[in-house]
Length: 154
Ligand SMILES: [Zn+2]
Image (cartoon, rainbow, N blue to C red; front, top):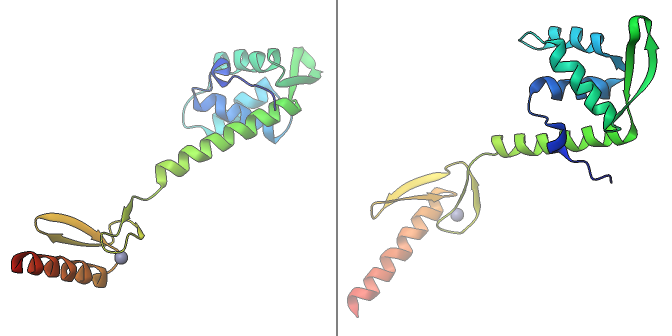
């Protein structure tokens, strides 16, 4: 695996991410990319946001020019290194998305099992406790009560 430095590429805008996605789809020239981006993004895409980035990708060996059309329109294609980079980037983004949407996980105060979300909540001795089920809560209170009883009798 090549040591690709993402910080050098500065994938800090949606536009750049989409440029990479479009190139991942197949070879395209700059104007084609701008046109497609304007259709799918909710804001205006300037050529200044696209051409310098395309040039950067080319300079870093992530793309190659497969064809030069009329009026010097260069058709870029991702190199195998470029495809790998995009795949890495996608993986990274999907991890971030997973983290962002991961539901809150609690642990049952009774049995220690993991609960997705709040589970069964009961306030015991002024403390909000999460349980996987009502029975665990009952059991927990029972145990606590027993311990108190024995402590009192001592
Ligand atoms: Zn439980």
